[in-house]
Figure 1 (cartoon, rainbow, N blue to C red):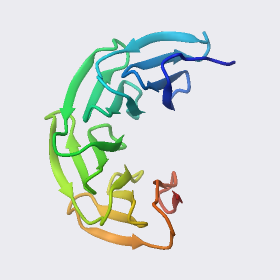
Figure 2 (spheres, rainbow, N blue to C red):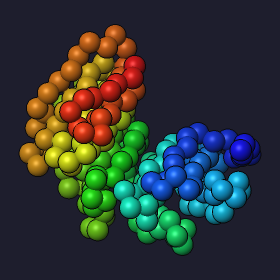
Figure 3 (tube, rainbow, N blue to C red):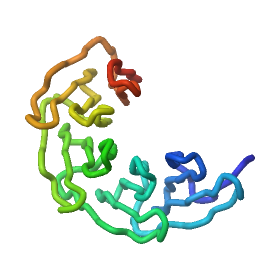
Figure 4 (tube, rainbow, N blue to C red):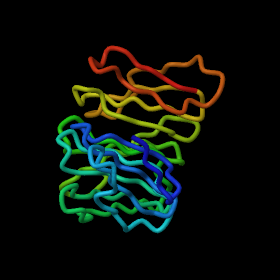
Length: 193
């Protein structure tokens, strides 16, 4: 079916069970679409500027959102309540993803940093630096031991989570690398420039 949103959709994300879609909106809302019913079942309001993207936790219980208001929020998917607000006063978030266990979040930022956040404590536990440009995307490997990041410096880097050390740099793109993702097995990296 077709769904038309009047909020200026910036991004969409399927829930892990493929029953719902989270629509990020320019007005700061997140619309939760029930695919079978073909209608909005809930609107999550709390961001003050455009929502850039959302990400579901692996179990589908939580939804993560980042916004142009320099905040990241964790929402309880069933109730629609905001459970935690992360304020990044230093720089804007470009991406945010859960780890495979749903206990940590990795973010990429305009200042080139990759940050790891503890969800329960609500704090940044690690800041990784190494890109010469903006960090545009970051995600955990399927086993949770590594992070892949992409940058406006035309590189892709793989980081060991525990040490924060760069274990691999991949060059070859002639322009900014907008995203880099691990394959489901974790043995390949797909990138887009």
